[in-house]
Length: 118
Image (cartoon, rainbow, N blue to C red; front, top):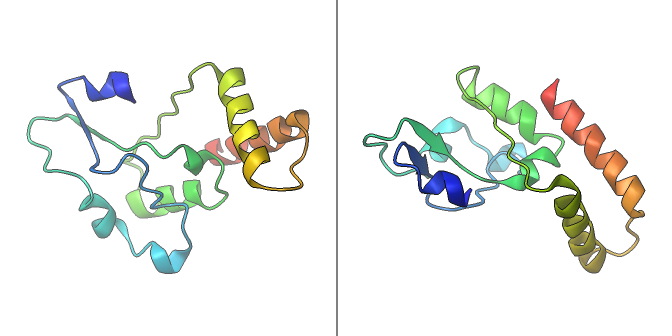
């Protein structure tokens, strides 16, 4: 996200991780409140937000598709995927008791990514 933020044609939301589409339906009232979280576009050709959890939240991708429509483009930038996955696993392991092993977590995450893309 840091590299994209330096590009003059890219505009980011006011908050880095909005978590707008991974919340339940009562907290996700449609695209207008979401769009208001972004500054005016000015000359920016692309408006971006970065919420990594969307890929892991089962309902986030369908909500994105339903509320933003076909004009929205999802781009997943992954830096060193194995290191990133292990870092996320360690964080969850510290925060939540009873986590599966790393291999099981990778399989579960891969299934979520596939479900989001189809």
